[in-house]
Length: 155
Image (cartoon, rainbow, N blue to C red; front, side, top):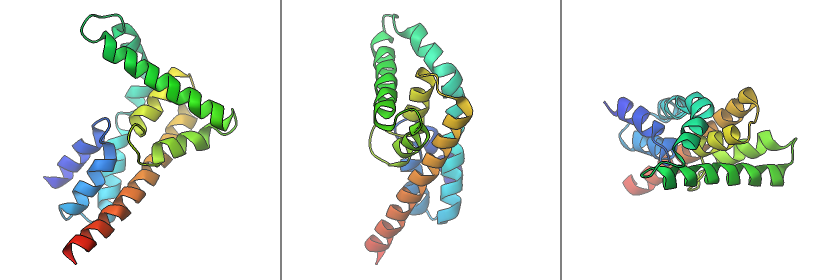
């Protein structure tokens, strides 16, 4: 059951595998299994986000109840992508996207990185590979932190 919960947690926006991998490790799932499950779960929504999220957000941006949130999501994705382009330039987008997704701080991750890539019409294949490598990096960081934290707590 913890395996399924880990998979589901890793698919949730904002939490993603940053929460799933520590949860898995804390519930006794071995490090590498936690990482694999977290990466798979975190990557499952990525193609859907890339191809459909922008369309849905643009459609809903002028709707009464959801418009404000959808507009915020569009602005967040656009500003995140523009910052990456400005810092990295055209040639460094791949590395910038990888690091944006891979450094586990609030507001970054596969969902936001993929949305930014989609909104700015970046190449699908390169974007997905950069996001996947970023997700793996974030999983390694969070898994290592969780392992050391668990060992510190349990002695």
